[in-house]
Image (cartoon, rainbow, N blue to C red):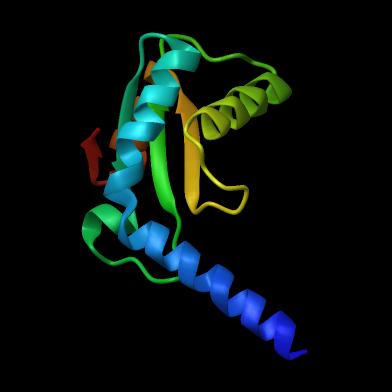
Amino acid sequence: MANIRAWLLKKGKRRYNMIKNYEYYLPLIKKACEEVLGKCEVYVFGSVVEGKFTAGSDVDILIKVEKIPKNVKERASIIVEIEEKAGLPYDHPFELHLVDEEGFKWYVETLRVKFRKV
């Protein structure tokens, strides 16, 4: 039982440090997005931008492209490829959202999220 607790604590600390130092990963994620998708815009939004993150938070990344695949599996495959090219560990705290112009407007106008371009 002590081994499990130690493993969970270590994992939690690593996750928190990744969130706390999320700025380090943004250029890696942006570069991976450009390699996989070509022309795209990358934004970070949510609790980290507002300075209100906790150890349980994630780091929301909005990836705006001209056209996204309709097929969910294709979109998931793109996200996995970006994660791998960026060198993110399997349990990383980054939540990648792939959107087109219409989806981007929805985030801006409906959710009114505070975001910053990477």
